[in-house]
Image (cartoon, rainbow, N blue to C red; front, side, top):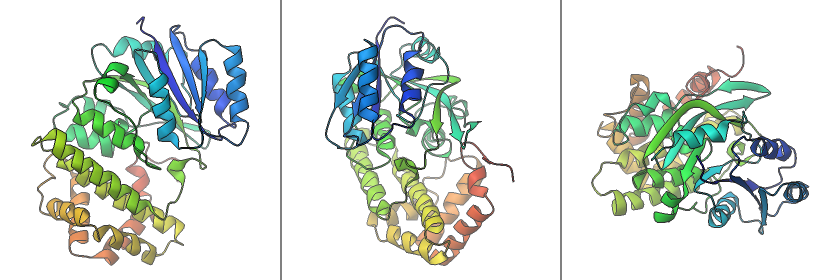
Length: 355
């Protein structure tokens, strides 16, 4: 409880929400903390806001760099952090209560990573997200822990709503890769593969804001290439470090969810046409790695620990469709899932607006 906590906030053109983010950190009742604001070459008033808080509070350290992306900003923060624990907060999000860091520090115990619950701020409406209690009861070695934690619930994928032991990151030389998106998912994959010990706090410790200007909500025509690069790096790392522990489901599910998500994005941003969905599904099918994992999923080899049954059936059917090149049928299925809002019901918050 006496160890210093380093809170790292990457900042890029975040003037609209930055003050709320900083205030929520500085009002924490945990005294021994430092706030590292890493400005990534902002062109708005973000740097001015950072300097104002730096001059006002001795807990604030302002770091600057040329625009290099969120991964480089977080890595810079890790390098300069002095605390025994590290917490990441995005500049458009905030901590919901003043006791959040105290609760996290009290709960981490001997673990390397503490995982808390969070809420989503969706069009000024706070929505509770899926709880980590849905997978925390499983052993980390079980497939159900991986599937629920990284995919169907997804809390393990995010770098926020967590507290990391800095010595664990240092000993394992863990840093963020140079990716435009999903860099936090890969970072947390590495934490898992390298044997992180987890603790859980089933209380909201973070508010994640739906910000249409953020990278998470941007349509990317080159997203297939990016996702496949992540999957390939993950597979290479598993072969080198995880040996025969049977973590192939991480790469397989990454490709499945990426293909499904990109199919959805291409439908929504491609004029809601089936041809836009078919195009991106065919692109995924052109990668040998994707072909391999869709084949294995279709044959049921990596489906054993996926639950509930709906997810198992959905992944199995999608994999068969990709294996047999039934892109038209799959595109129609994605269209119906979106039009009937089934995809929203399956999300971590459920339906976000009244029907």
